[in-house]
Image (tube, helix red, strand yellow):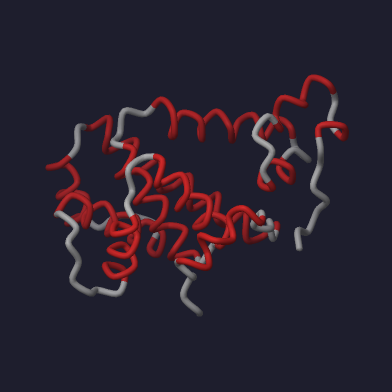
Length: 183
């Protein structure tokens, strides 16, 4: 159960009600700070809608962060969003297998993106070897966007965990299909 109450548009000042245009638990809790919600939405909106980084690769990186953080909210939401950007069920299983060092059908770019997400999430930075490999696959703009995306979602999963944001019922089937590992 969330550590703060979920807000509705009626709880907000008229000029802040648009912050709940996407009525999900994350925003309903985050709007306790309208200014932070605006800043969060600006960067999150850029990552999802304006970056020219391949959407499937972006979503694989985000899913890797959610999987490693064992974040039910992030994982379930981005399984759905990932599907919208071309992540297949086979990709999701491959991410799970790649994380466990099992063989997968993923290509070298996908495996490198997942490795970078794992390193940044677990160690705070990508290794020299991984970063060098990424430079061979991406323009400097896309490489920067990838690192910003991974770092942003590392922050998101920590917010979700600390605030204990609940997964909405419509996202539960994604957790049933691909349950997070036990600690």
